[in-house]
Image (cartoon, rainbow, N blue to C red):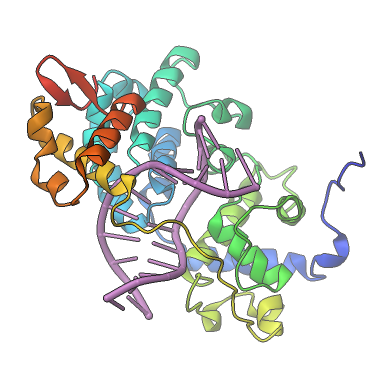
Length: 313
DNA sequence: GAAACGTGGGC
DNA sequence: TGCCCAAGTTT
């Protein structure tokens, strides 16, 4: 079986790639947001917490929760010393609460296996619960300046437009995209990772602020002259049918149970929990309520003891 | 590889 | 109003 080429076809890279690098770096230096986890005093743990919270959740909703977390748990050991239920409660309504559970588990792993310090290496980060390819690269690069190739949804969209000429990337991440992303990384052998950090962060920020999914602000783009999508006349995206509706789903019902448990300061009797206002508001039938509660218990997002159901210990 | 997994805001 | 989207990971 032939190996794929190590880098993207050089013919597909723009001849003025260095100019693109410089343009985005300069734009980022001026327009990049002053987010607290980008400040030097945030530290690796601050970066790590932000990356978990930002998985599928917008910056504006993460900001206040991140500030609370960093004040309350300034180190992995501080979080590791708490019951997991405290992490779930402090997670609030960020969504996908298993991220809080995994971040708590990762903090305990860091204390046990890494002497309480967030690991620097991609492979060590990848081994932590809740850390996938994106998050491992992001922490390694943004917290430690390592030249890892970071690819998130913003970066995929910028690449699709700037270099491939498509309005949006395909739903599934392809090997060709990964090769392109690798090939685009600036040569960072001798600069301590500063170029890689600026490139990854700059492209991501460009995607978040200018090269947005809908209504991109191309007039404000520092690399519009090099954009394959603009050159092609901004062809419209072809939307692929999306996932299930929200109303009536297990996700809605599970979310309602978690909201009820977060608001309770003591275990709630099973019958009382099933009749909580937020739970009843879902209009879900009894069998669905039972199934969802059972799944939350199985996932470790809730715990049932003698006195009722509560967030886990 | 598809499907599941929360929540809220924008157009 | 409904559909789309938001710094993904896991099974």
